[in-house]
Length: 285
Image 1 (spheres, helix red, strand yellow):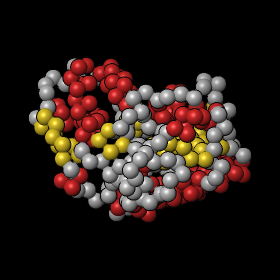
Image 2 (tube, one colour):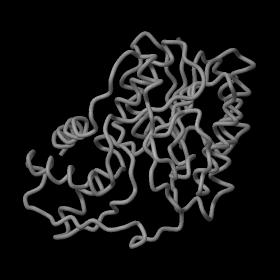
Image 3 (cartoon, one colour):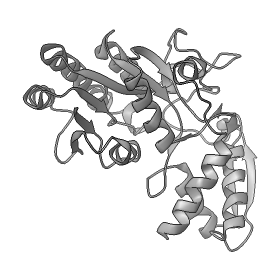
Image 4 (spheres, one colour):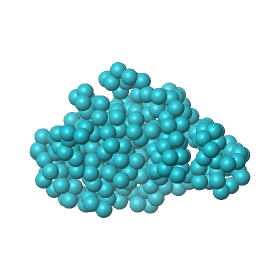
């Protein structure tokens, strides 16, 4: 099996690189090796490699910045995906593309299913929805949310830094979803590929949380592991008290039951994976 992994220096890319079978031939590229905004280069790279599978773990993820750079975000999040899909149709390879909960508007009263109508409310969400369309019906698309891993740039590590610097943090409590541990997402992508799955699926860790809930858990687990030397007050606030350029869905919990039906397993609760990640973070420190 010959594979290309984009976004290789990111959280998911690193997890994929560590989990792919040792017998595979893998080309792992980051933005320095392949500029996804250059669709011609993307197509040429995929054609020349004649890959059996391309894992697109890269994206323009600066949600707020995308409001003023939607054309750049669109090139990376949709243009590059279309170039990959077109090249793979010519060479016979499979595209595995990662998307986001931001394709939904957050107005649902239940967890979003893969077939639910998309209605993105931000530039980032619009570009990711366009990327799903560009991937085409033969791709394997997996939507996820709140991705984190040890050593990466993510909410968990940001909270750890701020908890060491401040006596009090204010965290949004009315945006609801579920965290996703990158190694679990990587294992799910590989499992769905191995099962021959095609179409759109969802994956996040089990359970539900607000950003406030997540922050409280980070504090408690970090204190127990000795990553924090003192208690920090965490104050719940509404999203309206923390305005951002981009609108965010108030509720973006993803229904992963179809994924679980294919893989015949159950993901761990997000707090269990958080504890695992923090132990890894402690080892890195």
